[in-house]
Amino acid sequence: MTGSNCEAAAPRVGAARTGDAQTGDARTGDAPTGDVPAEDIPARDVPAEGGAAFVLSRGVVLLFAVACGTAVANVYFAQPLLATMGHDLAMSPALVGGVVTLTHVGYGLGLLFLVPLGDMVDRRRLVVAQLLFLVGALVAVAVAPTAAVLLASMAATGLLAVVTQTLVAFAASLAPAARRGRVVGLVTSGVVIGILLARTVSGLMADLAGWRSVYLASAVLTALLALVLHLSAPLDVPRGGVAHPGRRRGRSRSSPRPCGATLTYGQLLRSTVTLFARDRLLRIRALLGLLIFAAFSTLWSSVALPLSEAPYFLSHTEIGALGLVGAMGALAAAAAGRLNDRGLSGRTTGTALALLAASWLPLALTRVSLWALVVGVLLLDLAVQAVHVTNQTLIHARHPEAGSRLIGGYMVFYSIGSATGALAATSLYAAAGWGAVCVLGAVISCLAFALWALTRHSVPDPAHHS
Image (tube, rainbow, N blue to C red; front, side, top):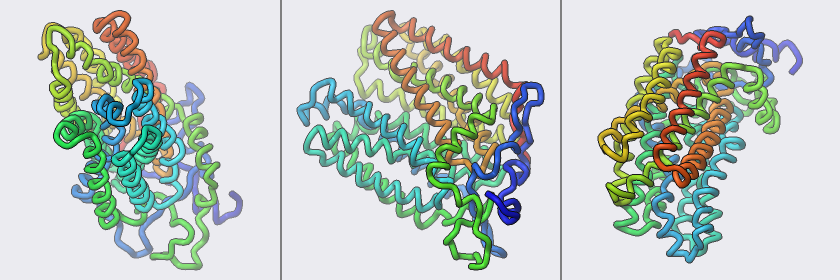
Protein backbone atom coordinates (compact mmCIF):
# COMPACT_ATOMS: atom_id res chain seq x y z
CA MET A 1 0.00 0.00 0.00
CA THR A 2 1.28 3.44 -0.81
CA GLY A 3 0.14 6.95 -0.17
CA SER A 4 -0.47 9.02 2.92
CA ASN A 5 -4.11 8.05 3.19
CA CYS A 6 -3.16 4.40 3.52
CA GLU A 7 -0.53 5.21 6.10
CA ALA A 8 -3.08 7.04 8.23
CA ALA A 9 -5.95 4.58 7.77
CA ALA A 10 -3.99 1.41 8.50
CA PRO A 11 -1.30 1.93 11.14
CA ARG A 12 1.06 -0.85 12.03
CA VAL A 13 -0.70 -3.47 14.07
CA GLY A 14 -0.29 -3.02 17.78
CA ALA A 15 0.19 0.74 17.62
CA ALA A 16 -3.54 1.16 17.07
CA ARG A 17 -4.55 -1.07 19.94
CA THR A 18 -4.98 -0.08 23.53
CA GLY A 19 -4.61 -2.52 26.37
CA ASP A 20 -2.33 -5.00 24.52
CA ALA A 21 1.31 -4.90 25.52
CA GLN A 22 4.05 -4.84 22.92
CA THR A 23 5.67 -8.11 23.83
CA GLY A 24 8.60 -8.52 21.48
CA ASP A 25 11.55 -10.29 23.04
CA ALA A 26 14.85 -8.47 22.69
CA ARG A 27 16.73 -11.45 24.08
CA THR A 28 15.58 -13.83 21.36
CA GLY A 29 15.25 -11.31 18.56
CA ASP A 30 11.54 -11.93 18.07
CA ALA A 31 9.67 -9.02 16.61
CA PRO A 32 7.03 -7.30 18.71
CA THR A 33 3.44 -7.21 17.63
CA GLY A 34 3.93 -3.82 16.04
CA ASP A 35 6.41 -5.24 13.50
CA VAL A 36 3.71 -7.02 11.52
CA PRO A 37 2.99 -4.78 8.52
CA ALA A 38 -0.52 -3.41 8.33
CA GLU A 39 -0.90 -4.56 4.76
CA ASP A 40 -1.13 -8.12 6.08
CA ILE A 41 -4.33 -7.26 7.93
CA PRO A 42 -7.53 -6.02 6.32
CA ALA A 43 -9.39 -3.29 8.11
CA ARG A 44 -12.56 -4.05 10.07
CA ASP A 45 -15.61 -1.95 10.66
CA VAL A 46 -16.42 0.69 13.23
CA PRO A 47 -19.72 2.30 14.08
CA ALA A 48 -20.92 5.14 11.94
CA GLU A 49 -19.78 8.59 12.98
CA GLY A 50 -22.00 9.69 15.79
CA GLY A 51 -23.74 6.30 15.86
CA ALA A 52 -24.09 4.03 18.84
CA ALA A 53 -21.75 1.06 19.09
CA PHE A 54 -23.27 -2.41 19.31
CA VAL A 55 -23.57 -3.60 22.91
CA LEU A 56 -22.75 -7.30 23.26
CA SER A 57 -25.39 -8.58 25.67
CA ARG A 58 -25.22 -11.85 27.57
CA GLY A 59 -28.17 -13.09 25.52
CA VAL A 60 -26.26 -12.63 22.26
CA VAL A 61 -23.20 -14.37 23.76
CA LEU A 62 -25.37 -17.33 24.77
CA LEU A 63 -26.88 -17.37 21.27
CA PHE A 64 -23.37 -17.58 19.82
CA ALA A 65 -22.54 -20.41 22.25
CA VAL A 66 -25.64 -22.41 21.24
CA ALA A 67 -24.88 -21.87 17.55
CA CYS A 68 -21.27 -23.00 18.06
CA GLY A 69 -22.31 -26.14 19.93
CA THR A 70 -24.95 -27.03 17.35
CA ALA A 71 -22.59 -26.56 14.40
CA VAL A 72 -19.63 -28.47 15.84
CA ALA A 73 -21.86 -31.35 17.03
CA ASN A 74 -22.51 -32.21 13.37
CA VAL A 75 -18.88 -33.31 13.07
CA TYR A 76 -19.34 -35.90 15.85
CA PHE A 77 -22.93 -37.13 15.44
CA ALA A 78 -21.90 -39.98 13.16
CA GLN A 79 -19.45 -41.72 15.49
CA PRO A 80 -22.00 -43.93 17.35
CA LEU A 81 -24.11 -44.32 14.19
CA LEU A 82 -21.54 -45.85 11.84
CA ALA A 83 -22.75 -49.44 12.11
CA THR A 84 -26.38 -48.41 11.51
CA MET A 85 -25.44 -46.20 8.56
CA GLY A 86 -23.36 -48.96 7.03
CA HIS A 87 -26.16 -51.50 7.35
CA ASP A 88 -28.77 -49.12 5.93
CA LEU A 89 -26.72 -48.23 2.84
CA ALA A 90 -24.92 -51.58 2.40
CA MET A 91 -21.48 -50.07 3.02
CA SER A 92 -18.35 -52.08 3.68
CA PRO A 93 -16.51 -51.49 6.99
CA ALA A 94 -13.75 -49.59 5.18
CA LEU A 95 -16.29 -47.36 3.45
CA VAL A 96 -18.11 -46.70 6.72
CA GLY A 97 -14.84 -45.52 8.26
CA GLY A 98 -14.67 -42.92 5.51
CA VAL A 99 -17.72 -41.16 6.98
CA VAL A 100 -15.72 -39.85 9.94
CA THR A 101 -12.53 -39.35 7.92
CA LEU A 102 -14.17 -37.24 5.21
CA THR A 103 -16.05 -35.17 7.79
CA HIS A 104 -12.77 -34.23 9.48
CA VAL A 105 -11.03 -33.64 6.15
CA GLY A 106 -13.83 -31.24 5.23
CA TYR A 107 -13.47 -29.50 8.59
CA GLY A 108 -9.74 -29.05 8.08
CA LEU A 109 -10.27 -27.56 4.62
CA GLY A 110 -12.86 -25.19 6.06
CA LEU A 111 -10.38 -23.97 8.67
CA LEU A 112 -7.89 -23.17 5.94
CA PHE A 113 -10.15 -21.67 3.29
CA LEU A 114 -13.44 -20.49 4.87
CA VAL A 115 -12.64 -19.16 8.36
CA PRO A 116 -10.15 -16.52 7.07
CA LEU A 117 -12.99 -14.93 5.09
CA GLY A 118 -14.18 -13.44 8.38
CA ASP A 119 -11.36 -10.89 8.05
CA MET A 120 -12.46 -9.95 4.54
CA VAL A 121 -16.28 -9.87 4.49
CA ASP A 122 -19.02 -9.02 6.95
CA ARG A 123 -19.05 -11.74 9.59
CA ARG A 124 -22.78 -11.73 10.21
CA ARG A 125 -23.52 -12.36 6.54
CA LEU A 126 -20.76 -14.98 6.39
CA VAL A 127 -22.13 -16.83 9.44
CA VAL A 128 -25.71 -16.81 8.18
CA ALA A 129 -24.65 -17.96 4.70
CA GLN A 130 -22.56 -20.81 6.12
CA LEU A 131 -25.39 -21.92 8.38
CA LEU A 132 -27.85 -21.98 5.48
CA PHE A 133 -25.46 -24.02 3.33
CA LEU A 134 -24.93 -26.30 6.33
CA VAL A 135 -28.70 -26.86 6.47
CA GLY A 136 -28.54 -28.06 2.86
CA ALA A 137 -25.66 -30.43 3.63
CA LEU A 138 -27.49 -31.87 6.66
CA VAL A 139 -30.66 -32.47 4.67
CA ALA A 140 -28.57 -34.22 2.01
CA VAL A 141 -27.11 -36.49 4.69
CA ALA A 142 -30.56 -37.25 6.10
CA VAL A 143 -32.01 -38.27 2.72
CA ALA A 144 -28.86 -39.84 1.22
CA PRO A 145 -29.96 -42.78 -0.96
CA THR A 146 -26.45 -44.13 -1.61
CA ALA A 147 -23.08 -44.35 0.07
CA ALA A 148 -21.57 -41.89 -2.42
CA VAL A 149 -24.15 -39.22 -1.62
CA LEU A 150 -23.69 -39.80 2.11
CA LEU A 151 -19.89 -39.46 1.93
CA ALA A 152 -20.03 -36.30 -0.19
CA SER A 153 -22.64 -34.77 2.11
CA MET A 154 -20.62 -35.58 5.23
CA ALA A 155 -17.55 -33.92 3.71
CA ALA A 156 -19.66 -30.82 2.99
CA THR A 157 -21.02 -30.92 6.54
CA GLY A 158 -17.50 -30.87 7.97
CA LEU A 159 -16.46 -28.07 5.62
CA LEU A 160 -19.37 -25.83 6.69
CA ALA A 161 -19.27 -26.72 10.39
CA VAL A 162 -16.23 -24.43 10.70
CA VAL A 163 -18.79 -21.66 11.12
CA THR A 164 -18.08 -22.46 14.79
CA GLN A 165 -14.67 -20.78 14.52
CA THR A 166 -16.07 -17.83 12.60
CA LEU A 167 -18.50 -17.31 15.48
CA VAL A 168 -15.71 -17.46 18.07
CA ALA A 169 -13.74 -14.80 16.18
CA PHE A 170 -16.92 -12.74 15.70
CA ALA A 171 -17.73 -12.82 19.43
CA ALA A 172 -14.14 -11.89 20.34
CA SER A 173 -14.20 -8.91 17.96
CA LEU A 174 -17.49 -7.65 19.40
CA ALA A 175 -16.38 -7.90 23.03
CA PRO A 176 -14.72 -4.96 24.80
CA ALA A 177 -11.12 -5.69 25.76
CA ALA A 178 -11.94 -5.90 29.47
CA ARG A 179 -14.50 -8.68 28.86
CA ARG A 180 -13.00 -10.49 25.88
CA GLY A 181 -11.76 -13.45 27.88
CA ARG A 182 -15.16 -14.03 29.50
CA VAL A 183 -16.94 -13.78 26.16
CA VAL A 184 -14.56 -16.22 24.47
CA GLY A 185 -14.91 -18.52 27.48
CA LEU A 186 -18.70 -18.56 27.33
CA VAL A 187 -18.79 -19.15 23.58
CA THR A 188 -16.19 -21.90 23.87
CA SER A 189 -18.35 -23.52 26.56
CA GLY A 190 -20.92 -24.09 23.83
CA VAL A 191 -18.28 -25.73 21.63
CA VAL A 192 -17.20 -28.08 24.44
CA ILE A 193 -20.75 -29.09 25.28
CA GLY A 194 -21.55 -29.64 21.59
CA ILE A 195 -18.54 -31.93 21.12
CA LEU A 196 -19.05 -33.98 24.25
CA LEU A 197 -22.83 -34.37 24.05
CA ALA A 198 -23.05 -35.01 20.30
CA ARG A 199 -22.47 -38.75 20.63
CA THR A 200 -24.95 -39.12 23.49
CA VAL A 201 -27.69 -37.15 21.72
CA SER A 202 -27.22 -38.89 18.38
CA GLY A 203 -27.28 -42.33 19.97
CA LEU A 204 -30.51 -41.62 21.85
CA MET A 205 -32.25 -40.07 18.84
CA ALA A 206 -31.17 -42.91 16.57
CA ASP A 207 -32.65 -45.44 19.00
CA LEU A 208 -35.94 -43.52 19.03
CA ALA A 209 -36.37 -42.50 15.38
CA GLY A 210 -33.49 -43.80 13.28
CA TRP A 211 -30.14 -42.27 12.36
CA ARG A 212 -31.59 -39.98 9.68
CA SER A 213 -33.67 -38.15 12.30
CA VAL A 214 -30.47 -36.87 13.92
CA TYR A 215 -29.51 -34.88 10.83
CA LEU A 216 -33.04 -33.72 10.05
CA ALA A 217 -33.41 -32.35 13.59
CA SER A 218 -30.03 -30.66 13.35
CA ALA A 219 -30.98 -29.10 10.00
CA VAL A 220 -34.15 -27.60 11.51
CA LEU A 221 -32.28 -26.23 14.53
CA THR A 222 -29.50 -24.83 12.33
CA ALA A 223 -32.03 -23.05 10.10
CA LEU A 224 -33.67 -21.52 13.16
CA LEU A 225 -30.32 -20.33 14.49
CA ALA A 226 -29.48 -18.77 11.12
CA LEU A 227 -32.69 -16.74 11.28
CA VAL A 228 -32.15 -15.63 14.88
CA LEU A 229 -28.52 -14.64 14.21
CA HIS A 230 -29.61 -12.70 11.12
CA LEU A 231 -32.01 -10.72 13.30
CA SER A 232 -29.83 -10.39 16.43
CA ALA A 233 -26.18 -10.08 15.41
CA PRO A 234 -24.76 -6.72 14.27
CA LEU A 235 -24.11 -6.13 10.57
CA ASP A 236 -20.74 -4.49 11.14
CA VAL A 237 -17.93 -5.30 13.54
CA PRO A 238 -17.93 -2.30 15.87
CA ARG A 239 -14.23 -1.62 16.43
CA GLY A 240 -10.76 -2.01 15.03
CA GLY A 241 -10.40 -0.26 11.68
CA VAL A 242 -12.47 1.38 8.97
CA ALA A 243 -15.51 0.32 7.00
CA HIS A 244 -15.37 -1.99 4.02
CA PRO A 245 -15.85 -0.46 0.58
CA GLY A 246 -19.38 -0.49 -0.70
CA ARG A 247 -20.99 -0.26 2.73
CA ARG A 248 -22.90 2.96 2.61
CA ARG A 249 -24.76 2.73 5.87
CA GLY A 250 -23.37 5.49 8.10
CA ARG A 251 -20.45 6.34 5.76
CA SER A 252 -20.12 9.17 3.33
CA ARG A 253 -19.51 8.33 -0.33
CA SER A 254 -16.57 10.72 -0.14
CA SER A 255 -14.85 8.67 2.58
CA PRO A 256 -11.45 7.29 1.54
CA ARG A 257 -11.33 3.68 0.39
CA PRO A 258 -10.08 1.50 3.29
CA CYS A 259 -6.63 0.21 2.48
CA GLY A 260 -7.04 -3.12 4.30
CA ALA A 261 -9.82 -4.12 1.93
CA THR A 262 -7.36 -4.18 -0.99
CA LEU A 263 -6.12 -7.61 0.05
CA THR A 264 -7.05 -10.35 -2.37
CA TYR A 265 -8.23 -13.74 -1.13
CA GLY A 266 -4.84 -15.26 -1.95
CA GLN A 267 -3.03 -12.56 0.00
CA LEU A 268 -5.42 -13.10 2.89
CA LEU A 269 -4.51 -16.78 3.07
CA ARG A 270 -0.78 -16.12 2.72
CA SER A 271 -0.88 -13.50 5.47
CA THR A 272 -2.02 -16.18 7.93
CA VAL A 273 1.26 -18.03 7.44
CA THR A 274 3.17 -14.75 7.63
CA LEU A 275 1.62 -13.80 10.97
CA PHE A 276 2.44 -17.15 12.59
CA ALA A 277 5.96 -17.09 11.12
CA ARG A 278 6.71 -13.63 12.54
CA ASP A 279 5.14 -13.89 15.97
CA ARG A 280 6.66 -16.33 18.43
CA LEU A 281 3.75 -16.12 20.88
CA LEU A 282 1.36 -17.29 18.16
CA ARG A 283 3.59 -20.26 17.36
CA ILE A 284 3.96 -21.28 20.99
CA ARG A 285 0.24 -21.01 21.70
CA ALA A 286 -0.50 -23.04 18.55
CA LEU A 287 1.92 -25.76 19.66
CA LEU A 288 0.30 -25.81 23.10
CA GLY A 289 -3.05 -26.22 21.35
CA LEU A 290 -1.71 -29.15 19.34
CA LEU A 291 -0.39 -30.90 22.46
CA ILE A 292 -3.43 -30.40 24.70
CA PHE A 293 -5.79 -31.67 22.02
CA ALA A 294 -3.53 -34.62 21.32
CA ALA A 295 -3.93 -35.49 25.02
CA PHE A 296 -7.69 -34.82 24.86
CA SER A 297 -8.08 -37.08 21.83
CA THR A 298 -5.87 -39.76 23.38
CA LEU A 299 -8.49 -40.15 26.11
CA TRP A 300 -11.74 -39.70 24.20
CA SER A 301 -10.84 -41.80 21.16
CA SER A 302 -9.93 -44.85 23.25
CA VAL A 303 -11.79 -44.72 26.57
CA ALA A 304 -14.74 -46.68 25.18
CA LEU A 305 -12.48 -49.69 24.59
CA PRO A 306 -11.73 -50.66 28.22
CA LEU A 307 -15.27 -49.73 29.29
CA SER A 308 -16.81 -52.14 26.79
CA GLU A 309 -14.65 -55.00 28.08
CA ALA A 310 -14.38 -56.82 31.41
CA PRO A 311 -15.13 -56.03 34.15
CA TYR A 312 -17.66 -53.38 33.03
CA PHE A 313 -19.16 -54.42 29.68
CA LEU A 314 -20.92 -51.05 29.43
CA SER A 315 -23.39 -50.40 26.63
CA HIS A 316 -22.92 -47.67 24.02
CA THR A 317 -25.52 -45.53 25.79
CA GLU A 318 -23.78 -45.93 29.15
CA ILE A 319 -20.40 -45.08 27.63
CA GLY A 320 -21.94 -42.09 25.87
CA ALA A 321 -23.18 -40.80 29.22
CA LEU A 322 -19.54 -40.23 30.14
CA GLY A 323 -19.79 -37.20 27.87
CA LEU A 324 -22.10 -35.64 30.46
CA VAL A 325 -19.22 -35.79 32.93
CA GLY A 326 -16.84 -34.34 30.38
CA ALA A 327 -19.24 -31.50 29.61
CA MET A 328 -18.54 -30.13 33.07
CA GLY A 329 -15.18 -29.16 31.62
CA ALA A 330 -17.09 -26.36 29.95
CA LEU A 331 -17.22 -24.70 33.35
CA ALA A 332 -13.48 -24.12 33.07
CA ALA A 333 -13.91 -22.19 29.85
CA ALA A 334 -15.81 -19.31 31.44
CA ALA A 335 -13.57 -19.30 34.54
CA ALA A 336 -10.40 -19.22 32.44
CA GLY A 337 -11.80 -16.33 30.44
CA ARG A 338 -12.34 -14.28 33.62
CA LEU A 339 -8.78 -15.02 34.78
CA ASN A 340 -7.45 -13.86 31.41
CA ASP A 341 -9.34 -10.59 31.77
CA ARG A 342 -7.51 -10.09 35.07
CA GLY A 343 -4.12 -10.53 33.38
CA LEU A 344 -3.52 -14.04 34.79
CA SER A 345 -3.19 -15.93 31.53
CA GLY A 346 0.30 -17.26 32.33
CA ARG A 347 -0.67 -18.56 35.75
CA THR A 348 -3.87 -20.05 34.36
CA THR A 349 -1.94 -21.88 31.65
CA GLY A 350 0.66 -23.30 34.02
CA THR A 351 -1.88 -24.49 36.59
CA ALA A 352 -4.09 -26.07 33.92
CA LEU A 353 -1.19 -27.90 32.29
CA ALA A 354 -0.09 -29.28 35.67
CA LEU A 355 -3.65 -30.56 36.22
CA LEU A 356 -3.63 -32.08 32.73
CA ALA A 357 -0.51 -34.09 33.54
CA ALA A 358 -1.91 -35.12 36.93
CA SER A 359 -5.23 -36.28 35.42
CA TRP A 360 -3.58 -39.37 33.94
CA LEU A 361 -2.93 -40.82 37.41
CA PRO A 362 -6.62 -41.48 38.21
CA LEU A 363 -7.28 -42.30 34.54
CA ALA A 364 -4.72 -45.11 34.81
CA LEU A 365 -6.96 -46.71 37.48
CA THR A 366 -9.97 -46.93 35.14
CA ARG A 367 -10.01 -50.75 35.12
CA VAL A 368 -10.38 -50.90 38.90
CA SER A 369 -12.55 -47.85 39.62
CA LEU A 370 -15.11 -45.93 37.59
CA TRP A 371 -14.88 -43.14 40.17
CA ALA A 372 -11.20 -42.75 39.34
CA LEU A 373 -12.19 -42.44 35.67
CA VAL A 374 -14.74 -39.73 36.51
CA VAL A 375 -12.14 -37.74 38.48
CA GLY A 376 -9.60 -38.08 35.68
CA VAL A 377 -12.10 -36.99 33.01
CA LEU A 378 -13.09 -33.93 35.05
CA LEU A 379 -9.47 -32.88 35.60
CA LEU A 380 -8.50 -33.44 31.99
CA ASP A 381 -11.44 -31.58 30.49
CA LEU A 382 -11.13 -28.67 32.92
CA ALA A 383 -7.43 -28.34 32.08
CA VAL A 384 -7.82 -28.61 28.31
CA GLN A 385 -10.62 -26.05 28.12
CA ALA A 386 -8.80 -23.59 30.38
CA VAL A 387 -5.72 -23.64 28.13
CA HIS A 388 -7.83 -23.57 24.97
CA VAL A 389 -9.74 -20.45 26.02
CA THR A 390 -6.51 -18.77 27.14
CA ASN A 391 -4.90 -19.55 23.78
CA GLN A 392 -7.81 -18.16 21.76
CA THR A 393 -8.11 -15.02 23.88
CA LEU A 394 -4.40 -14.21 23.63
CA ILE A 395 -4.23 -14.96 19.92
CA HIS A 396 -7.16 -12.69 19.11
CA ALA A 397 -5.84 -9.90 21.36
CA ARG A 398 -2.46 -10.10 19.64
CA HIS A 399 -3.89 -9.16 16.23
CA PRO A 400 -7.60 -8.38 16.57
CA GLU A 401 -7.83 -7.25 12.94
CA ALA A 402 -6.79 -10.75 11.87
CA GLY A 403 -8.89 -12.63 14.41
CA SER A 404 -10.60 -15.00 11.98
CA ARG A 405 -7.40 -16.04 10.26
CA LEU A 406 -5.49 -16.54 13.48
CA ILE A 407 -8.21 -18.60 15.15
CA GLY A 408 -8.61 -20.63 11.97
CA GLY A 409 -4.85 -21.21 11.80
CA TYR A 410 -4.73 -22.13 15.49
CA MET A 411 -7.52 -24.65 14.99
CA VAL A 412 -5.50 -26.33 12.23
CA PHE A 413 -2.97 -27.20 14.93
CA TYR A 414 -5.88 -28.40 17.08
CA SER A 415 -7.00 -30.72 14.27
CA ILE A 416 -3.50 -32.11 13.80
CA GLY A 417 -3.24 -32.80 17.51
CA SER A 418 -6.66 -34.46 17.65
CA ALA A 419 -5.93 -36.71 14.67
CA THR A 420 -2.49 -37.66 15.98
CA GLY A 421 -3.78 -38.47 19.45
CA ALA A 422 -6.63 -40.60 18.13
CA LEU A 423 -4.41 -42.60 15.78
CA ALA A 424 -1.68 -43.14 18.38
CA ALA A 425 -4.09 -44.07 21.19
CA THR A 426 -6.12 -46.64 19.28
CA SER A 427 -2.99 -48.24 17.82
CA LEU A 428 -1.27 -48.33 21.20
CA TYR A 429 -4.32 -49.81 22.93
CA ALA A 430 -4.38 -52.70 20.44
CA ALA A 431 -0.67 -53.33 20.97
CA ALA A 432 -0.15 -52.72 24.70
CA GLY A 433 -3.45 -51.96 26.47
CA TRP A 434 -4.93 -49.12 28.51
CA GLY A 435 -1.88 -48.58 30.72
CA ALA A 436 0.23 -47.72 27.68
CA VAL A 437 -2.42 -45.26 26.48
CA CYS A 438 -2.28 -43.47 29.84
CA VAL A 439 1.51 -43.29 29.65
CA LEU A 440 1.19 -41.73 26.19
CA GLY A 441 -1.30 -39.17 27.47
CA ALA A 442 0.91 -38.31 30.43
CA VAL A 443 3.97 -37.87 28.20
CA ILE A 444 2.09 -35.52 25.85
CA SER A 445 0.77 -33.54 28.81
CA CYS A 446 4.22 -33.22 30.37
CA LEU A 447 5.63 -32.01 27.04
CA ALA A 448 2.98 -29.29 26.99
CA PHE A 449 3.88 -28.23 30.55
CA ALA A 450 7.60 -28.22 29.68
CA LEU A 451 6.95 -26.05 26.60
CA TRP A 452 5.07 -23.51 28.71
CA ALA A 453 7.72 -23.54 31.47
CA LEU A 454 10.60 -23.00 29.03
CA THR A 455 8.94 -20.16 27.13
CA ARG A 456 6.88 -18.30 29.73
CA HIS A 457 9.63 -15.73 30.44
CA SER A 458 10.98 -15.31 26.92
CA VAL A 459 7.53 -14.62 25.48
CA PRO A 460 5.38 -12.87 28.09
CA ASP A 461 1.65 -12.87 27.49
CA PRO A 462 0.04 -9.54 26.66
CA ALA A 463 -1.52 -7.77 29.60
CA HIS A 464 -5.26 -7.14 29.46
CA HIS A 465 -6.61 -3.86 30.63
CA SER A 466 -9.96 -2.24 30.37
